[in-house]
Amino acid sequence: MQHLSEVLKILDGALKANASMATSYAGLLADKLESDGEKQQARMIRERLARAPMAVASAQGAGHGHMLGQMPTDNDSRLNTVDYSQPTLETSEVLLPDAIQNRLLEFIQCVEHHDALQRAGAAMPNRVLIYGPPGTGKTQTARWIAARLKLPLLTVRCDTLVSSLLGQTSRNLRRVFDYAQQLPCVLFLDEFDALAGARGNERDIGELQRVVIALLQNMDALPDSTVLVASTNHEQLLDPAIDRRFPFHIPMPIPDTALREGLWRKLLGSYAPDELDWKELASLSEGATGATIEHVSLDAKRSAVLAGQARAQKLVLLRRLGLTLALAKGERLTTTEQEIRWLRAWAQSHFTFRALAALYDLPLRQVQNLLNEDKGSRDGIQEKAEPGKKKRQPK
Image (cartoon, rainbow, N blue to C red; front, side, top):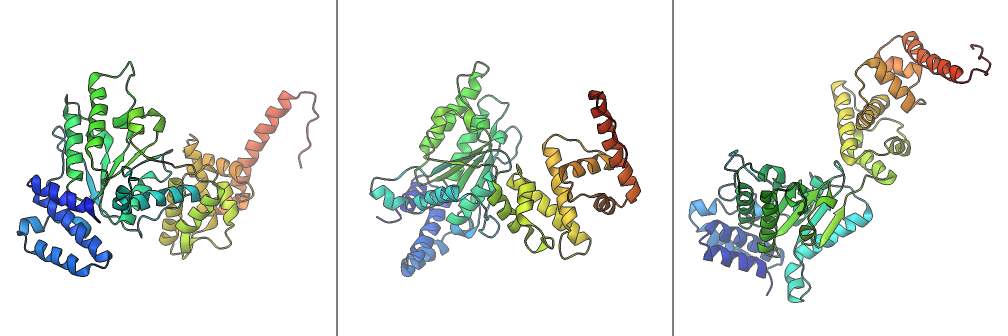
């Protein structure tokens, strides 16, 4: 039977006296029938939904962008533990290496054809674990998955679920998973290691171990058709039992040269400086994450807009990149002189004396003196280290 998942969810909602859940999945069933060409059947379902009481109809949600019922909250802080969003492909585009992109498309296909795979005895739980360093696009990938599936995204920052009250964290988990089953959605567990850390550590207290057990139980209680996405910066810290629950593991690496070039081209767009050497820019940004490239691109665009220019200036872009990379390396550049020294050492061919003077609106002589003093200090240190070496004559 086609669309069995939706039919079972409608039945679950009816048995639980949960009208919001039943109508939500009925709306999704109508959408799927219409996409299959069964327009009359879709119209009949929507006519029934239209006759539902107003309170129920307003909660329908399924492919129409409405939230359901009361959002789950933490009793301790009284804050919502879930954020609701409806990503679109236009706002969720993500650039990834080909192999990773293909693996994600395979996951999307498994979700979209879950019923057919189930009939063939080849279905797997629709769960994917995304892991990698900060800034590599894990959250954006979760948004892209939801957009491709045309489903709302329920984002849970797992660290917000953790409560100081004994047993409250497990109750928070139960509420989130119960809520996610009421509507077709992608449930995104961000900072997953905050909940799913490995058990057996001597420093663990009983409560933290109970949280992992509660997480396992809630995951196992989810129907196979529910889409679960989890992300972590520390995949090696996850409990092995949790790790095995995810059929798909997607690593998110630091972008290579080709991917960095693609990110620069996409993010700078029409604001790219004239005569920009894309390959050189990709080389200069070695080690930068996608988030870093996005941050620098937005800064360069803002500078251009505020200056009334149609394109970003090349030196302004490179300065933003150089200073961002310095910060990532732990450099604390608190003065103009420190910035000038760093940029000169980082990309001397671009940051000439004249370029630095124009960029910082300083007299050329002042920039020359500053950098020549540094050069003289280094030469003096070298001569002291090599006392037998003849002193160079100034040019």
